[in-house]
Image 1 (spheres, rainbow, N blue to C red):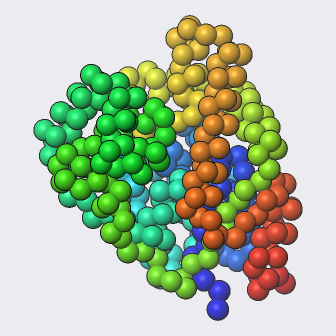
Image 2 (tube, one colour):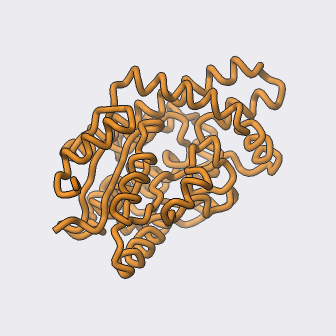
Image 3 (tube, one colour):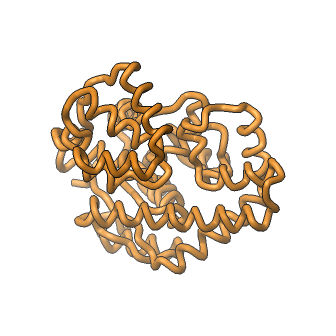
Amino acid sequence: MEPRIWLIVGPTASGKSALGLRLAATIGAEVVNADALQLYADLRILTARPSPEEEAQVPHHLFGLVDAADGWSVGRWTRAAIQVLDEIVARGRPAIVVGGTGLYFGALTEGLADIPAVPARTRDQVSAEYDAMGEDAFRARLTEPDPAAATRIAPGDRQRLVRAWAVFAATGVALSGWQAQTTPLLAPGTWRAVALEPPREALYDRCDARLAAMVGHGALEEVAALAARALSPDLPVMKAVGYREFAAHLRGETNLDAALAAAQRETRRYAKRQSTWMRGRMADWPRIDALSPDDQWRQFLALNPALTP
């Protein structure tokens, strides 16, 4: 019996959205977004959200749903995703969860910690401490109670660093300790997964080319519109790869070529972090190492021969 839920994860520009769409069209499935930035309505082009034409081919869920000013947490996405998955299964259709946010997939397959709420006073105090100490010293302090979080949280991710220490300060238990006390949200046997891991240099070349194409298709206009809203830089959408670099160009701080090169560099680093997460947390997931859509589909069918006509 085939699973009702398929999980497709991969780094940016790896082709996961195209593979998910092809699978959905083949088996009559609906697609559910598992990309933290494709949730937001403001940066369709810069976050490589499916086009309106692609979204029209099969039902898509949790894409472009959220306003930039409304920062969603992993928990909030999980609650929305589980509701959508239940509704799809109730309609008798398969679901395909596609994205590159490892925390989302971890919540589904490993569970989401029931962490007590952190008082606002504690959050504000820890935020002030971060600003006073700077990232390096703050991260070094976090290493003692929660070395896993200090290592896992990406450079520059102020929001997650502050949250990790605030949880420890408020509860006396490290964030990683809470996260270890979890139960999978998807029942065993109901899902099947695949991870895309194409050759790194070929992936980097695709990242560079795609970002350059985005500039010609309206990415700068998206960035200008979002920057004009003067939102808090701590909001998740403001961390979209390329936003900071192109916003600096629009402010006249750098030319477009330099901004594009910097954004391409950050995109490659982001892809590397995603791949590192996959290798560490999804080591037992079947792999697809091709990059072309047809080769990826052939490898997917080889892993799932029951789908072959």
